[in-house]
Image (cartoon, rainbow, N blue to C red):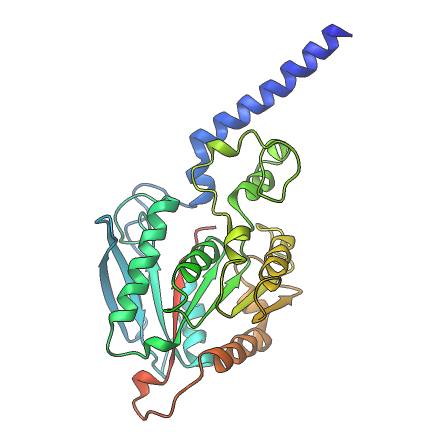
Amino acid sequence: MVAYLNILLYGVGGIVFTGMALLVAFQERLVYVPVVPGLTKSYPITPARLRLTYEDVWLRSSDGVRLHAWFIKLFPDCRDIAHRLEMVRIMLQKLQCNVFMLSYRGYGASDGSPSQHGITKDAQAALDHLCQRNDIDTSRIVVFGRSLGGAVGALLTRNNPDKVAGIILENTFTSILDMAGVLLPFLKWVIGGSGAKGVKILNFVVRSPWNTIDVIGEVQRPILLLSGLQDEMVPPSHMQMLYAKAAAHNKECIFVDFPSGMHMDTWLAGGDHYWATIQQFLEKYAPRNDEPDSSSVTSHVAATKSSM
């Protein structure tokens, strides 16, 4: 009996040690995908090539890292584009808004390497830039984040309630601690977020926990949560838990699910219902004013680029 117990303990210890080694060595690649040297400093396509009116914006994060962003202005004659820009093209048409897209450090043309601490600074630099512009209505800034972008956006909105009119989260996780158990199922007994049961002895090795479930309960701006029920990366239950936590503290919280939506294509699978949902949210919480200048009557969506 003692021998069997020793074997069991050694087996569990081996699993924990292996899991710890994997998390220490590869967690950045699990969280910030894809951070591949040599492939992150160029864009396969740009707004200029696709005849979108836009501005290249170069920012400095508070710790000095040079960041790149696109400010894509509302333009009625948008042409077909690819990847996330295709969603932006439709967003411009359906929502009549400007879009500010930030590349976190380590992505696109931005310098540096991604981390929770650094990306938090990057998002703040982007919002500060928008608030200093004189060609937009800064009272109508709405944060939009998908996946990791939702975690970033929730933290940004919580920290800047006076600068953000509302926030839209799509297919976002409760925390990286919970996602570790999804991506590496054999670790779910030794790692997990604040709602997990048991002693989570591997939590201390996670450098970017992104505890959105804790942050969302402190957000005091209107929240729209969009959930694709066929999400193959983030379990839809994460979005339901985020909504439950948010709604318990915030009366201006809306949850809408899309039965055929997957992680990256909920906007496409949701069709007109998806865009109508966002438009209603913008009309209620970032309404148009009566000024004739078109640059000041459009909503301004600050989109944080997700990496999951």
